[in-house]
Image (cartoon, rainbow, N blue to C red; front, side, top):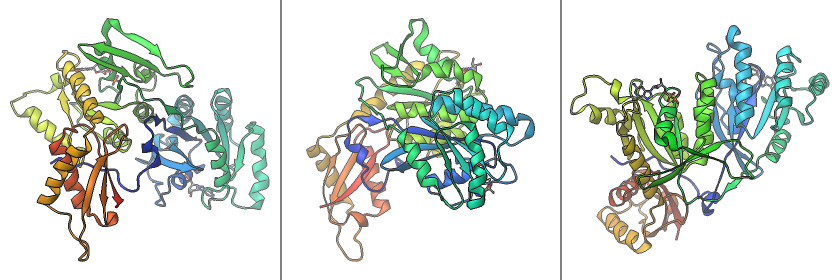
Length: 455
Ligand code: GDP
Ligand code: GDP
């Protein structure tokens, strides 16, 4: 029942830092059909074609992680969010560009030599030139020498960093990436003693109402620490024995209204906020249930080892509530989040001020769980018992033994198991170990990482 999606693979280098770094966002903008999603796929290393010719919409592929020259970054394909219908077309692209300017570390502005320079390219270029963000012009579909000559017309857009490439063959993409990561800082945040909380969720789920209810009249808004370039605003909460920072709440309260209906905006905003947070409160509208955007946000939080509290809002609108309504609802919800379903779920009504404090308490509990450090001796006592009850299955007649286990000294729960055959521990056995850790120690709301090392 406690089965949790686990981060696998080799131990990432970053986990040795006590401090964590903020993932930079690289946004790709430009007209439809210039090749944005082709480049996106190349950057995140997926070969599958995601171009859906019928709808003109590329779905669920807007966000991926990549690295180049030792720097990590998230790539966002803004084209995935814009429907290609003519009437909304120009306005949609302008929105897309504006959001990228607000949220990205660096912008790849893509144009297409096969079509040549268009009015819309010029419009986008004007917006980008005014922005105070690094912009790299990527002239795409430069597949051969003749096109190289034609591509020269794009110098007239006036971007110092202009690159010619072919996303299909990959030629020129290396030079482009070299330039892109020059702007990627992987800025390291010093760990704060106060937990950083992000309130995320779909438009209209009740995020701003929730934040306002928490902060009330006494809200005390402090700007980010000097030296960070982003204009986000944090709010400090200190009441009833609970103390934390709400990250990016100004954005939730002001800007969200401007872009309310843009799916792209809510995901982009959420990525930013999740990166800065220790814990996310995912607000779900009870009348809608869990939707794909909620899951996308949840998976990002899980991947990045953030604590999670699920707050189902607008519980007042659910009619004919019976004794089991909440329990049934909770079951439906946690099934959606499977396999990571050891989660606190709170049913609240911000409107009627019901159970808002329960959410605050859950934040405190998840923070405690995420900070939990189990002494090695205690951990080994428990885990040796667990492992003797059910030993690791042998591999081709070879006996597998796990000698000992320690919790790594990092910001989120991660455990290293020392064994004679790290590569032969079965998936089912890893699940067993994780479930037992969750049964023995309280890690509700927190992703756990297990690593297996040679001993
Ligand atoms: P998006 O709408 O900007 O995301 O564009 P897509 O990535 O969907 O690409 C639109 C079309 O251009 C597709 O048919 C791609 O195969 C094609 N395309 C993308 N990159 C290149 C390239 O470098 N050279 C050529 N010849 N075609 C490309
Ligand atoms: P946001 O877009 O996520 O920030 O959502 P808002 O806080 O702006 O809320 C969207 C709408 O839902 C507003 O009209 C709120 O008054 C309403 N709302 C928020 N919380 C509740 C609730 O608990 N019950 C009901 N019935 N409506 C709510």
